[in-house]
Length: 209
Image (cartoon, rainbow, N blue to C red; front, side, top):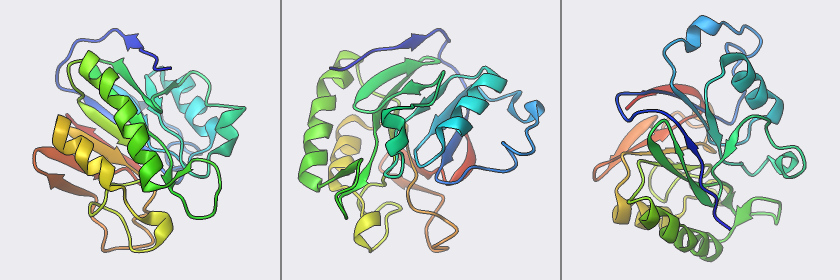
């Protein structure tokens, strides 16, 4: 069942902190609240400890929206406290419509892993809530889309069905994780697909929207 959330906030220029894959010592071990003074929204693209996300949302009081990564099996029983899960749904926060799909390409049968066909069904199930909201502004995922920030090995292969969702609804942003920029220096932090800005949120990255 799809759920709908709304946290009051007028649509306008926003500063977003995107996170993925590795907890930043700068944000956790050396936390400084001044770093967050202009941040309106935090987005987590997965593979981050639930305690890390709960820590950030508790100390900053900034809305945090997340999807799970393929290493986040602990989220099933102990999800991040005080955070908003956008997996398989559309949430509205700070006036932004955010559609989320966690997980990655199936490679060993673990949790939050999907074949292209299974992910395609999840994409199709998002169409109704997206239409209900009149579109989306942000597409939040763990895995990248095919040909945009993915890699050649199966675990890091992108989903082609993500491209179809982007082409159909043309969100302003797609934000993903999963492919570590520290592992492959040929991967781009940002790229474009038509009018959609695609961003790899590895560790931490500030986005102005």
